[in-house]
Amino acid sequence: MKPRLLKIARLPAMLDHALQAAYEVVEGDEAGTGSGEATADIRALVANGESTVTRQLMARLPALEIIVVFGVGYDGVDVEAARERGIEVTHTPDVLTDDVADFAMALLLGIARNLRVADQFTRSGAWSDGPFRFSRKVSGARLGIIGLGRIGAAIARRAAGFDMHIAYTGRRPQAVDYAYYSTAVELAAAVDFLVVAVGGGAGTYHLVDTQVLEALGPDGYLINVGRGSVVDEAAVALALAQGRLAGAALDVYENEPRPDPDLLALDNVILTPHMASATLDTRQAMSDLVMANLQAWHSGMALPSPVPL
Ligand code: NAP
Ligand code: 8YV
Image (tube, rainbow, N blue to C red):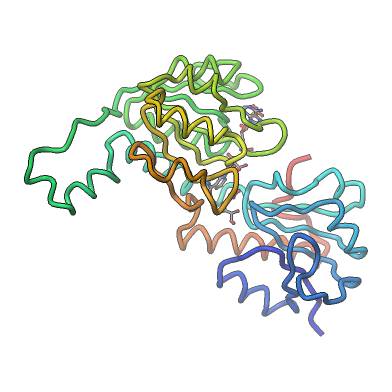
């Protein structure tokens, strides 16, 4: 008999198939099981980077031994509650870093050069009435990165290829040649493009607020590939509408899958559906890492990618 596993998030078909081959997959939700199935023997739970795994959910799963997150971000998992119970938590770092950094640059270039509106302009025939308006030069501009971790550092490496002047903020300075600012406000005041590459959770909630947007200013651009909770989305919509911010390109939102409705009508914004890591190659690598963590746990081996202590 296959062991039973609780799945509480939508996963790509390739991972669903791999899970189904090894487990009896019980489809559930963040409140427990959706179908009312018994959960007393469930020892493994699979979630994704956007999932919430509360202490209450864990309490409904008395045999739970491992929470496997399909994603690098695990801010929705109550890791402290898991530790108290000796439940392992794993995630999928590194394998998605390149894609997310590539996508951050695509968003940055896209909003600076106005790609979304330029495409509409060409399709609509408006070009016959004259040329498209000027856009913003990226090469040589000043870039600020909030969160110089795996993804932030990969963005910096790519931006160096555009001769950008790179600065960052984090909880502490790192041994790198980029300029360090101890606060997001100071960083925003010093750059043209501000990229959020930090994870979610209480420590980063609304790190980008009205004050940071004011510091970035009417010629500044905001890009978010980190977590929606890091940015005060209503404040961004207001600043864009009032011309206090030049543009924003967002892949993540406070309330997914519904971006703040005030953003939808604006021209100076690009909105993508949390897709920065969603290439076929990377989804396969993330799926493989999920399965590798489960297999290691089953055979009592060291887990390939537990969340850091
Ligand atoms: P990481 O290596 O852990 O990097 C996170 C960085 O954030 C660390 O360098 C950390 O540096 C910094 N940090 C933590 N708290 C901070 C704070 N309060 N203020 C400023 N900086 C802070 O993680 P990663 O692999 O780069 O991933 C980062 C995040 O990207 C994930 O957690 C996830 O939310 C997001 N993500 C999004 C997508 C997407 O599809 N859009 C895909 C993958 C990941 P210090 O410790 O020095 O502060
Ligand atoms: C995924 C993410 O899209 O890794 C993360 O933290 O946010 C993204 O890579 C997500 O986890 C899959 O749903």
